[in-house]
Image 1 (tube, rainbow, N blue to C red):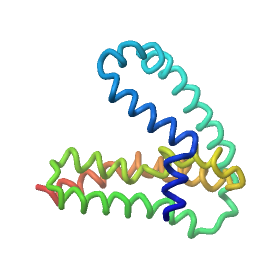
Image 2 (image 1 turned 30 degrees about the vertical axis):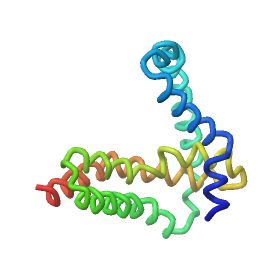
Image 3 (image 1 turned 90 degrees about the vertical axis):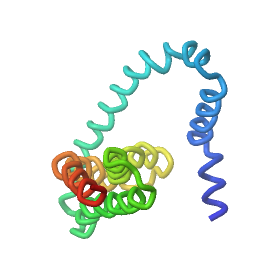
Image 4 (image 1 turned 135 degrees about the vertical axis):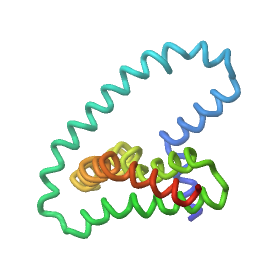
Length: 161
């Protein structure tokens, strides 16, 4: 585990992200105003290109899921439910408000498609794109949008009200 934590905190992208958060925290409002051209306007354009690239890669890789094992498909649909359930348990223990619990559940359920495709693409080039793009963005994401968010909302309201 020590190696994993060392790797997680010293790899280039993670170190850059942690450093950026530290600089942002330390520079306060003045630093935020100075960085506005990069973090505001330019960020939106770069985000649009990034999302377009992710969408194109997903569209190319979803057809390759056809020959994959059904257990992988099931995992893409069961994992978000499991993660959202764990988040609900944490929300109950912490006494979070219903809205905060729903947000935590949605974030936990969507962890596989928020960060994984972009990170795996560069960090583990030998990983199979049909698996991490196709499953996360081709199955889990639509499942969460169409079914998950409503289900998580109902579960949080039932557990916390």
